[in-house]
Image 1: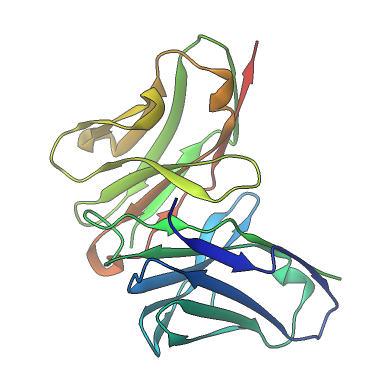
Image 2: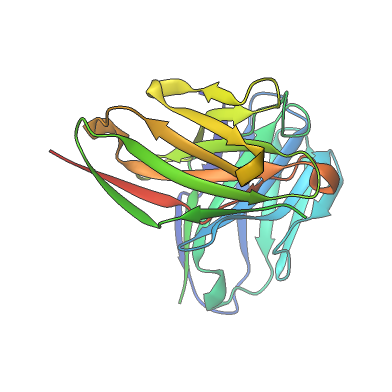
Amino acid sequence: DAGITQSPRHKVTETGTPVTLRCHQTENHRYMYWYRQDPGHGLRLIHYSYGVKDTDKGEVSDGYSVSRSKTEDFLLTLESATSSQTSVYFCAISEGLAGVYNEQFFGPGTRLTVL
Amino acid sequence: AQSVTQLGSHVSVSEGALVLLRCNYSSSVPPYLFWYVQYPNQGLQLLLKYTSAATLVKGINGFEAEFKKSETSFHLTKPSAHMSDAAEYFCAVTGGGSWGKLQFGAGTQVVVTP
């Protein structure tokens, strides 16, 4: 299994509070991704990173920010959590751009509940 | 932009029966297509991928998928279902201006009955 851990694995928080989710990899892969998974929507890309301090927005980036100060860590922050951000969040990594030659490996997920 | 549509959010199959999961794609450029599987409380795992080398793609756990350009489809099949195939399956596409960003379908939950 690819060395990807996510913390915390479960979190319950209240509306309006800041939340930070952490993704840590031991594979030294260049690309890291944050997705959210919701019933009926599959996985949707929030943000991704193509190197230290290099990030870009995905399909559903509103209300989220990310940071990557080290190759191995990719942080997802909800500045002020809302109930619509209740979801399961997955981190993924790939050595190069995900596609033909570079498989995207997924972490175990973080279940976030915003009350 | 690319997109995928998975027909059927839930599929129930008997153990030993054919598994058929449908995926249709929309793409303005030749797509790269993937099938992922998600077991309960786990992340996604790659089953197989289409990279234009061959239209019939074989993956892990006895699954295979056929790319049909004329039908814009990439359906996933397994001749004989096993209880361990119970999981959620996702079709995904990338390519063109969205290279490196996977666009996922909504997923199909497979239930296997004895």
